[in-house]
Image 1 (cartoon, helix red, strand yellow):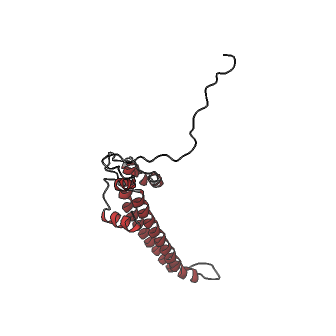
Image 2 (cartoon, one colour):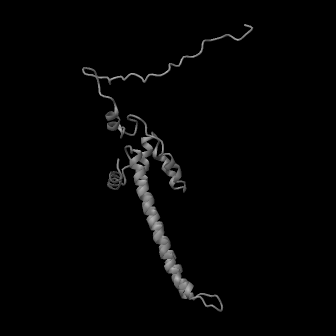
Image 3 (cartoon, one colour):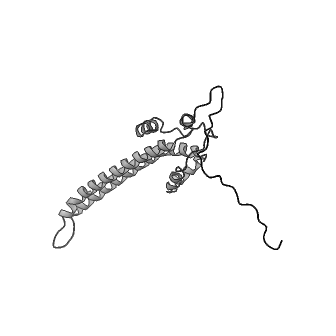
Length: 185
């Protein structure tokens, strides 16, 4: 699955917790959300520096005290921007739940592992998304890579349903050494 296909599918099915997801679907979407998070974090930091500039410039050089109104404005800006960042982060985490559940299903794991998100341990289900999914259907649905796996099989012999067996590459045959009893027996 390409980057664009993954993004389109995940945004079209934000609350589809059934079925299975390939690694590419999950990781491309994960990458997009990480890029969005970093960009929004950078914007937040820039706005915080912009908001603190009047406080710094309004500091009395003799006493070292800032104007109370400037400090209150900065704290208000800080609170609003932090609340906005938390809201956006929560929405991004919600968008990540469904692909993560489908990815866990592909590895034959229950989506109950997603409860770690509430405990602040979202890394656990993300790390569980690393292994390759189970081959063939499992209790969560058909294999999403079935068509790809069939395409990679060698063609069947004419008149046969089995794939053509290719001879092994020439090489040394490994045989175990003959059994020699220990001395004294």
